[in-house]
Structures are given as C-alpha cells and as structure tokens.
Image (tube, helix red, strand yellow):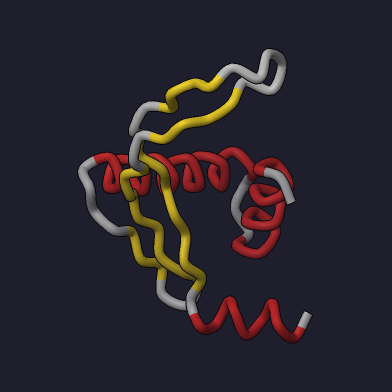
Length: 92
C-alpha cells in the first residue's frame, strides 16, 4: 500500500474527502518526524513504536572499486511492532 492508497482508505472509512484525509495523514507524519527529531519515542498503541538510534561509524566497501571506505556515524529510525500488529501479521 502506498501513500495515495492509504489516503483513499482513510477517506473511505471516515467519510471525509481525500484532501482532508491527505492533510490529516501529512500532519500525523510531520508531527511524528518532529518528535523523533527531538529524540522522543513515538508510540502508537496497538501498532508499534518508532525511535531514533545512533549507528556508529563503520567500515564499508565500494562495490565498484573494492576500496575500503568509512561510513560516518548517523542516526536511523527503528520500528518495533506492537503486540496487536504482530498477532495480525502472524495470522496472515
């Protein structure tokens, strides 16, 4: 499912227009991003939690040349599914 399909589903299930559903989804995602940018964990009950963790500097390899390169430390977003979501996916 892509973003447009998600917006269509939100609009259909709530009875609002696609424009309003799109604005609501954009707002939710923007606020989640702001919270994670500030180092906060975002928890959506029944769905899961998102948090930012720092990945240490590491060595990598350029696949074209075989040269060893240094990959700088950086932040990554991690997701941990909630119990309800894990159960739904297992039944799948």
